[in-house]
Length: 259
Ligand SMILES: NC(=O)c1ccc[n+]([C@@H]2O[C@H](COP(=O)([O-])OP(=O)(O)OC[C@H]3O[C@@H](n4cnc5c(N)ncnc54)[C@H](O)[C@@H]3O)[C@@H](O)[C@H]2O)c1
Image 1 (spheres, rainbow, N blue to C red):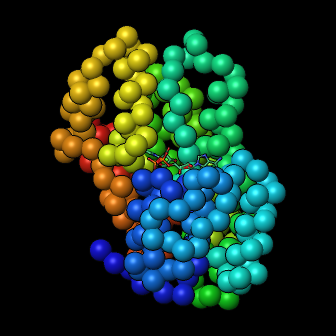
Image 2 (image 1 turned 45 degrees about the vertical axis):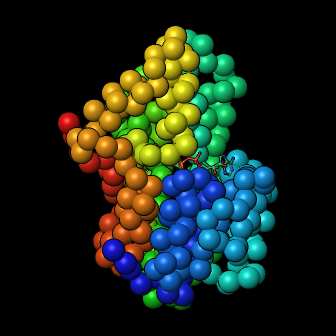
């Protein structure tokens, strides 16, 4: 599946991770100039030569990167807020600091990205002849609750609503900026491997293979999602084929939420 994004500049956060790398790779394959961002010490991997340090909870870090993009490229057509964390634990044992860290990265990070990038997205769209696009990577966990993930589920539900609120606000103000979210089910990824290990530890040593089998059984296609399948949904939302989609949730879950 390809779309022509030639000449467009895209920023992908969390681009060192499994899903972010797949998104950046596909955007680049479709012609976009991709700025890949991640925490200092997590840069590299993938094929991007344009890596930038970004801590998405830090306002100054955002301002510095967006200013650099404006100076270097003069435009920003696409913002993909993909970076995120997935802490696991019993709600009753969760420290407030851990809860707040999850909200700060998953929710505040997406908010700061939208707020900081918005002026450049708007000026780009005003001259580009197409609207600018924001895609937030939320999660099926933000729609359907799962155990030992209260902070994560709550944060991803907030990302979904942040996306809709921003989309409706921008449309009402006449801003040429669309915002949509993707909600993957469990993806074959390091994040899921870590979640299963942690789940096993919290539940007193349930074998990880049993947990994985149970997780897969909950997915109607009998397998987990692949990172490139999440990336395809992001690409679609960034493309002209999705020009009338706004405040939309795309569930990349094989029907898991509906089941
Ligand atoms: N893996 C899954 O099963 C799954 C399912 C649904 C949704 N998601 C979401 O998809 C996104 C990507 O997940 P992934 O599986 O690629 O995870 P990952 O851990 O491989 O990648 C996440 C990336 O975000 C970066 N990051 C974390 N905190 C950051 C910060 N403060 N500033 C900048 N970057 C930061 C990490 O360094 C990492 O490279 C996340 O938002 C995740 O919640 C993942």
